Image (cartoon, rainbow, N blue to C red; front, side):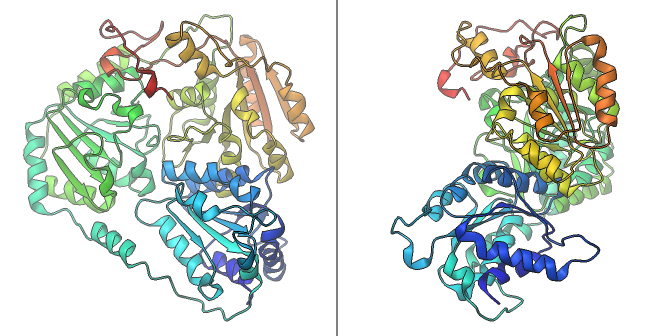
Length: 596
């Protein structure tokens, strides 16, 4: 086989059923190999490994990410050298920040030309080394096959992440034997994996946990994205149900626990529900599972979970233990095995706690500090739009978002009954993520309604992907909540910069999104401007059989509340005009170095 044919065959062996990418000179041999592979293997008129072409390479990266987030499988992006590869830097870093497994294969100039500033050359192994879980530059063609297999192994194992493979054009054109097996020797990595996987929770550790839990009256589970990445949602739910322990989730952990259940507190953190944040302050035993105490949740670490006398932490990455918040007990290992072992041990010890008072307290918090907004406003409130969408989809749709206010409104007002229904750029906060991620998710889950909740500023970043939706006949629903500017930036400027709206408006009012959607082939494209039309138009939008685009002109002053400002604790949470506050906030000193 040629090197290009080897790449494609290994992708097939790894179970890849779709590739996202944009062509160019340095990757053409591999594109040709995919064409020939599909031609030879085609059955029933469908390509076994379709190659989906975006508007640009960044879109390809986010499509691979959306596919991975929705499916749990490794997403694949295939791009050319130079600008093609550098356009992948943001998606790769985004995946690294959220621990998403993708393999990005980049063409490169011929080996002899590397370092000569050849046409469309960029030092991708140097650039990507700082952004990815691992990067390979293949200069020995005989190691190509093992490199591709090893890239998939590294991407999906341990704490998942993106792996980049830089493949010179002459390596793609090389011919040699296809082995059909083999991995690169990476003994250090595999030894660390084994150490974590084989570190089973023992009875002694369970006994310590049980002793402290027996003393607790207000335990709380704080679930992060690691629960979903580890496919441990069922184990988490079984543990929570067995002992009736309430659960709150991070932005990345939404869906790990059914948000419609009585003991769900939905999301905590900077824009979490007020009742989740108050419950976190009130708990006396905090159980952190697959979460990392990041700044958007822990805020001021010394004041986070201020009432907790004991904090336990389950994780798979040793670097996360005591990195931000010191804990009293931790376990590094497989989350499924650990949660099942601990549940079995506690049940064997006849542990049957009565948390009736705590449950009553939780119910009171949820009733008193419920999410709310101005329901009598003559202007369309974004929260009302999402409530209506949620009523129709019942917590079972896949929701992707851009980044900004619309992202937080979606996180707050949608329900998520299962994992992998919520796709958002969490740690990187990358505007333009939502639309291409929705495309990737729709290829992963043809059986699901996929909705992109976007903002007028965020969708502009990758607006060209509207045409990708219609080109491939995807029934994706796109909602643009239009407040004519960068709403989240404007909110911060209003709160912390005395209303100086510097560059957050941009005066970008010329775009007619409906005409743009129609020009890109959307058969259903409407603008919602009146409250009285909301329910009817949203129902039509969801019911439409095919791609649909809905622009909603929302109240430009609608804000995201609750909000915990940077450098302050949950006690100083701003709840806005429509959600009560438990206590008057103290003087808020804002450290502007911590912003964004």
